[in-house]
Image (cartoon, rainbow, N blue to C red; front, side):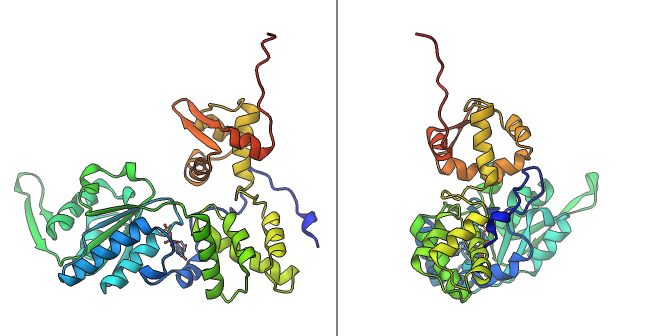
Length: 350
Ligand code: ADP
């Protein structure tokens, strides 16, 4: 056993983030293998699955396309997966792109004019579309037509090209950054929640089966509990725990080996990593529990504001360890307890 030889990691160093809910390129192939194919295989999110399955069935019965769908929620919760499932359930082809990839109106026009009736266009990070492209999308979504402006100034004319009836699925992590006219053009708006503990265990067990990893319920639960209620993180932890078991425990992924693997990855019982803990400890130790502004906090732990806001904070808020107030971030009583710290009370000498 050499786990004790691991060097402590510096917080300022670029270290791989095991709990990062964003995908990394090598992961994409394996993600495709693990992606549920049909709605029935998609674990949890019943508040989405039930109305969605009814709308899909109703649209199919009327031989219509499904109304445009907007999916929003944290990275790694299943937006892309759902988009593929919708396409499969509707029997259409899916074209996948992302807001920042569409630079010119021509890019979007080319995609739209190639869509066939019933196809799905999936635009990830739809909040990052540029304004001109967004405006072209309005008529495409509403009237299934492409309005192309020819020429400039007083001589400019609009040419209207008809499009096939398609379904746009937009995904975003930031609903508030979407303009109202765009948001209003979606017939369905669904918010993906963090997963419940039992759902997380089911996801780990399902992925283990697909990857031919033998894992018992207890070990799966252990991995699930530390995966920030996010399937992408769960799949990643499962793979790391398998590597660990292969090398240190003859391939047996028992609760003990899973627990050792997670300790090696410095992920605690709440699924927090060193940066989460640094965020909370610095609020407590350096800013007397807060409130402290996000910029100041980021500088104190040498992290980027965006990283804290998008990757760390949502889960800390969700666990009730952090509170967001108009004056900044505060550590809650639970955070003190989790880190084993005592609240300093003011001694007024009374
Ligand atoms: P997002 O688009 O929201 O970032 P993805 O759809 O890419 O997330 O999901 C990441 C991974 O998590 C997928 O490869 C899939 O295996 C898994 N996953 C997501 N949601 C579920 C779910 N409800 N059930 C099972 N696996 C899921």
